[in-house]
Image (cartoon, rainbow, N blue to C red; front, side, top):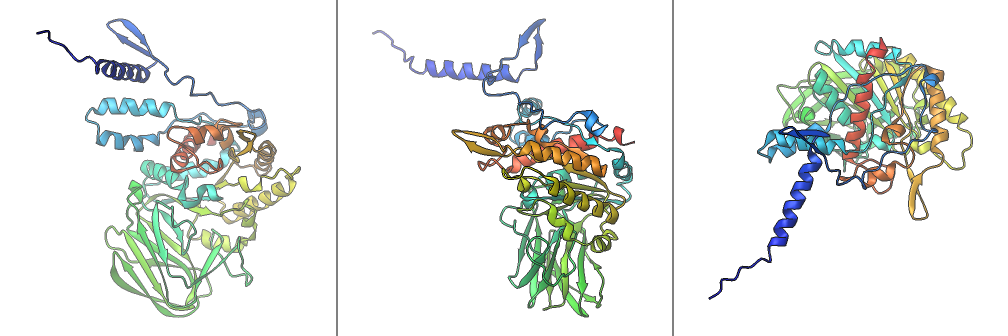
Length: 473
């Protein structure tokens, strides 16, 4: 009887083996030798990986700012590789695969430009971060809402220079549904006044432009998140308010009740809430109309704290409505060493031919910040790429080059630093590459970064920031 064999599975095995060999070949370094024989890496995705387009309208040479800097690279993707390592028994190979995956990520390192010497105080302060708190204020529009970009910058700087905790948080926030660095919940009887909605009574506001008044017995609860390693707990909690009367504050640390006597004051008061050990939650219970509340700061020792101030739908010009006197009162406690301004996408308009109005407003705002925070270096982040549909394609908003030139003029006029995020993304028509990246780095509105994209933006920014250290002397 003839013995017959089933060969139907052979094509499947051959296909799988071929794919494994191709992927391994792709993961090889550019020059790899075995027994003296050089193996060449196979670029199996070469047709898919396009080089970023250069756009002379979005790039500025050194002569414009009279300054430039080299950079040292820091890898935020390392945090994602830890997940790979956890389920991968071959650690060295996991590291190698992670580095190859990172090599294909969109975006490119772009150095800071402009007046880098005004960052010297910030870099000098970093040298003493083990002995004091270094504070950074990150202002922006919806691009940083949900603590996006900010939380990744915070995590990397804290990892290198110390500090734990999320820093300053308002009483209420619009991004509670997607904020990953902290869970916020609150009663519905807080009345909010702000510079970007309404403040008819001209109440004093925080650095973020907000103030909250309890209309009845109100509460707010902060709970840490496990998503970001150095923001999972806090050992210090501070409440920022102007008490309108003498009252007893009730609060809970990890569900354990505490009380604190608060005295009436007409000025900003910062109350130290007692925390024993590592805390993961704080709940405040305040009586009706007991004062003007601004927020809390959750911290853990010396190091770097990066505060997120997101102004949804705003071009940044609303910051002019914060009086310098109020900024200075907060500056006594939040003495910022660095201020980042990340606005622009809400100023874009095809009907705007002249951005002089925007330039004048932002110059005024920057000068106010300089007066209120004289120790702070300031960095303006250039507007990122944003697409609009043209036929079947998504192309860059035609107003972007004009606004970028205006932002460069603002930087030169105010003698601050500039980081060209547009160029770091890849320049003109780069947003579709971020949307179509694997994994995607931006949402399909072709405007906003997702969490992975925000992490990449933060990585590129930190590269540029710390790479400017030598030029800041």
